[in-house]
Length: 313
Ligand SMILES: [Ca+2]
Image (cartoon, rainbow, N blue to C red):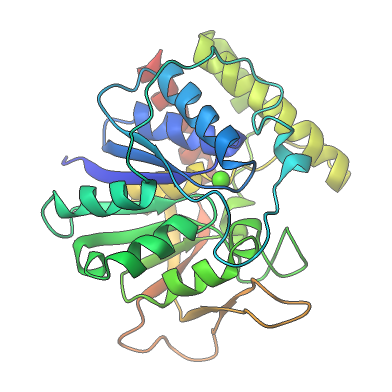
């Protein structure tokens, strides 16, 4: 099977870290570059975290570049209530020595796309869309070069940052508007899908049983992430993980069912700003370039993830 080449644009973040582990550990993914963007925490913190997790997982000879330190227009909103002051609270990673690429993330994305054959690289944004929006404004020709965009963000019936808006879209809705309106094939892996991605106690036990430094990191991450989730939701199960679902879809498209539907981003609404408005009223038009992720084979997602952790051990 040919490897899928991806660029992962992220803001680690506990679930971003798990997405990086899945991308590095799965043999079907060729992770060409990691780029970072302000989101769950400041650009400085998420870039530090990306370097730390990539080094911890043994990434070599692949660039990591920092991108935008704030959204296009709006002021910065972080997710410290979910990911803590560091962005990875509750975990213990060694201080990274991995060098940061000296290019801006936007330039690294453009140059990487231009240095590979057209339509061989999938963009996987799992944070706010600021870097991707600026890349396509700076170099509009990348629309034709990208194989597809598979992003974690949004939700067609649900929000988390507000009643109807998801965090990654809500923090930079103008950037999301740009990205969703370019004519590249785009899959929105939103909250409707990712809320199905909850590990069971048995899955968490299977991860712990790997008994490696990386499995310990995942256990610490999930314990921290789940404690906040249980408190906020008065729940007793494990927190769902968002970002790994986008990587999993690139690895195996049979894990997730999708529906083609036009999607646009609300920019004006006092109550609805950042909503990913999906129009399900009619069959999708022939030229519809967007689709939403609908249902997940959750046991297979976790099997994929555990296998990736084994490969990294
Ligand atoms: Ca993220």
